[in-house]
Image (cartoon, rainbow, N blue to C red; front, side, top):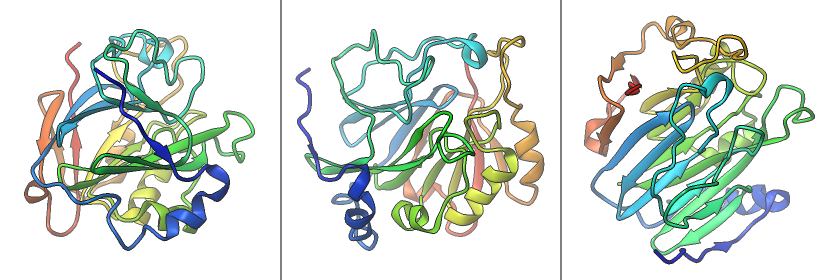
Length: 256
């Protein structure tokens, strides 16, 4: 499939100025219908809807992801939050997709994507650099994927991100992502309708090298928020399927 052309409106240095003008209007003309999410392990998901397939954060199986299959699935667009040894690996992806890995605002036919820079560690990015939070509308839903956010969300970042319908949030601690407490703080700040935890220890982990926590530590902090375990790696969402008030947590399964 021919690669989609895009225009990058803003780099990291001027993102705030441009992004603020978008807060009170949709990222693109709102689409209606639904979006299907498939959990591919760790922080990698495939989003299908509005005639597009969007893949987030493909990885190399190693360490905490050693037991997952490499998420080499066909997509039209790939969004990468960070590139390290095992993160943001696009080698072998079919379909020659367009790849986004830098903060900015990108325009596609009928769709706009915004990448917002945050720290990938809790020391100002001095160890692991920048993490890109991705924000877009698909299937009529405002989706925010926090990637490997590791530092509390600033007021400026909150303004740029807005209120998500669907928030994918890392919860497993380690040196490159939120602690469970920080994840809860990000949720309180952004006030999403649906919470999908990412970046936590599963049976995929190599016990000798994996330094992240199981999801239970996060879920224990979220008492009072409904938790909906999903017996599949795939769910289909629409605006009507989300709560009108409050939030719900959905934990997807993985077919090992």
